[in-house]
Length: 246
Image (tube, rainbow, N blue to C red; front, side, top):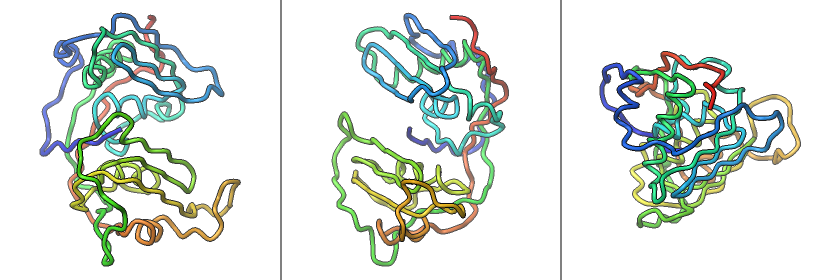
């Protein structure tokens, strides 16, 4: 998932207009609730889009190039209800075209409607620490397989990610959005381990790991600075929990 910056408030966008703008649609698509316990998986190729056991909390950001923290007025069920989507795309579809097709599918099946607005919120700015960024940066275009991030309790590992992607990952584990202010131009690998904030330790925790803010500085050479800043929001006006029939 990547994040976009939209400067200034944008006018309301109705779902019908968005659907009309999509140049292509899936040739066929199945959308249904996941069976509880189904492992999550996500795959795209030039002829198909498949997501297993994914919530709209993550499908919407993928489709619209926004970060999870940008979602506003999100119903609680959007984080817990999981869906299976299997869709066939026209041969030779690009990833951007797949995203547009997914937008149309979300509008058609979940009756998604939204608008965008900008609001000043408490954020963290991700900036270089005094000792400087500690990871090797490669200045090249992204290739297939780049930008992968694996994250879970107390850990996050990234392969050839950009600094905005790192900031977006950190946002998942903090109480406010993280905005990239590093000035890093290029891609890098990272491995970050920290002790979660809750009182009880769980299996898989790494004893002795620092809190996440200290880990970011010690392991990456970056700092999280609390401040207020305008944040571009994806405001959900309407979405239905039960998808329309295929």
